[in-house]
Image (cartoon, rainbow, N blue to C red; front, side, top):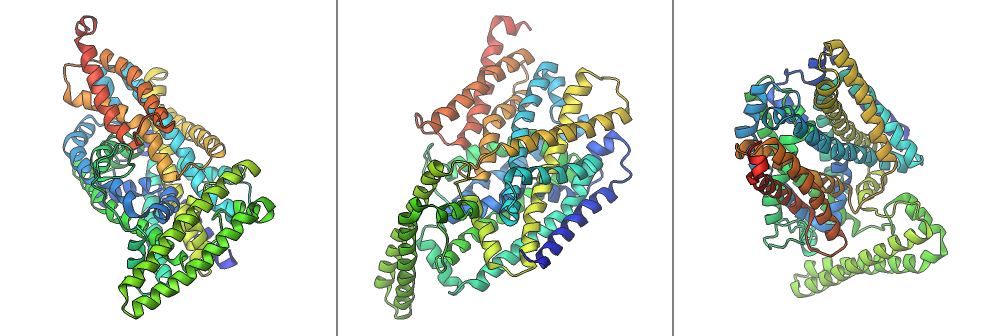
Length: 562
């Protein structure tokens, strides 16, 4: 990065942090720190989108599309339906009770133990996810600065902690307006620069992407072992979003900042309408990066640290040579494809496209072999480079100033989502556990101090998870996997509360204790290849299984009398 990039990057980040602290300088009560209830619908909507759109979205999603195409967009197809259901059935109860957290409602319905256990499940999964949202932007800065990844995690975590501790929910909401603006401007510039560098017309880019299988956005095949299809999206995805937006405090806290029920509903629907186009646009950016990289030389690994290790070790020489041969053959095939199209010879054009597909398969195989060899020769290096694809494009193909802006986009997204998570973790800890069980008569000022201290504590815990994290197959999938291990069960608790009025707290409590380990076991079995079940299905299975077990337990004589 050049000095211009650093000026843009630092200026954007300082403005956001200072603006957030300044706008919330008069925060003096725990109520305004935790909730606020002052946001119009559009701010609620932007805040919800910014919370969900972490750095992982802008790092990992293009890398996901680069390797597998647009199919990931199906993951969001259940989102509008989930927003409608929540707006009709859930929001009125939360606003009617004037709750700070989603789990306060559970005590009224089931008693204190169920409230505490459900809150603990949330704290576990969201604490892990907060670590990953810090880890994602640390990948960028460590690549740019050559810093140790652990030190970078600590620096980013501390930056987020500063303005979250000072401003709370209102600081998060106020700064998310600017963060979303930076994000949207940055992504439009990124796609514009891709087309600027593209050596072929837009229509030819689409044809090449389609022929390589990158534009297949919908799969109607029903297969529990297929990660993304219309069925897993509409069933598994809908359950996941119902739980995420209806029971995850990091999102509940966003729409509880709405001035009233109407503003909160409009904010949710705003998110439901715009999220799919936004994700499609980000995925499409990754697909266009794939097309562009067909015409240029790319390294065997997009992770610069891994690539440096590859270049310095003789054991990788055969793989490097094979990769270089593929690059040469690809350029020849691309030239021949363009010539066949110019001569209006579709048969020859299709033959050259088939050759390009075969070359791509061979290249992905070589990259996999390189990752496996790195695991042996350099186990301390992150081997999976999916999440480095977009940052490689940014650093190598964008002009000075624009690089700084795009890095600011990713860091803004990181700060936005991580701040929301820390705020939600602190709020849940203080309201559902600390105040309810240990300090029931705490004053407003004591509650404010406690919330700030727990924000700091959860920030340190998130940094610890980030420092000890490793790259999963793909970061955006890692976050959704962690959520799916817990969200179905948590949603099941709320579903029983709303839909099964005769089921009591003890039955639900025992159902949680029984079902949660079963969901984790199912995931372990699927990872070991003993069963074919992708993670999205854990959401409806967890929810429906908990409802069934709670209902059956309620029928037992002992609990029926409780």
